[in-house]
View 1 (cartoon, rainbow, N blue to C red):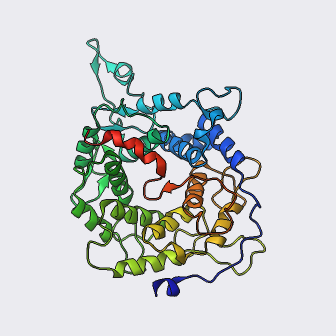
View 2 (cartoon, helix red, strand yellow):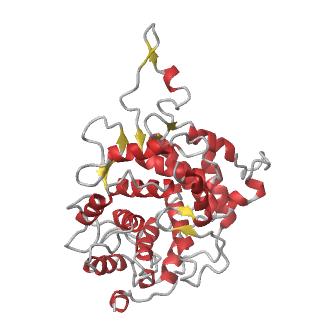
Length: 397
């Protein structure tokens, strides 16, 4: 009944869509981005680990990390060369065992040389910069990226301390702060970081860092009775990204249906299904994409944020996947590779990654992707499904 009521009117696949999936171009795009980024990314230097995550995970979904040409024995003169061991070394340079997590970049020096570079006074007293923190999102992306690169995690010397730090980061309302140690009470605290805590706990097979009941109550407190979606914090407007974080958190905690109230699911499925944009005039705009909020433009990243939410809610079929896949494919850049936010824009690593995530989870739903090679992804965790086994060594660590 829910599906019949919420199913959007079908529309024909967009005439703007490229006729083929540009796998080789996408591999070259992500490979190049690992070594060279436009100046516009400079402001994201504190989140550089996330940019690496987008690129590495995308290459993994494309099967490129399995190709001999991209391994350590590849041709260093080609644009497709990736030194996996070098990336792993760099990620571990951001690991802070004492604080229990990973930093987002080496803007204050990496872990190896931090103490030396920030020694002060004739006695060499070590001064820790006030902005030297580990970040919960960076810890999540570090672990996910290391698994994609088939790391053995032997250098993650104290994974239990990550769990201890998680416990300290949970707030009294069930949410999580972004950084540790907190420099003040003004650290961000919302559903994004609840999700990161759940993902980290799943990777490490240790849930001692989360008060699950409290976190579950927080997720539900972010739901909006007005339209049925989920906001980033209680009382905020519903949004596709925060909806995914809330739904995925409940899924990972095993609390999707534990409250005995199914009405919120029906409202949420309805809200998600209504985010597919089906235009009546396609002369200038391809149709079928997802918007993150009502009255907003289509945006490729929401094909995953909202599409993934519906998959986790067992309601993936309420979407017109032929139309949605067609819209996402229309945002490929045929010259550079990658995907753009909207049709006709320049590609970027975030929207390129989440476009691939959607194409990965929807391959069995539409008719557009029969010739495309995208590996299956664990929808709730942003990790290729067959790479989850690399976390087994962290059990009971």
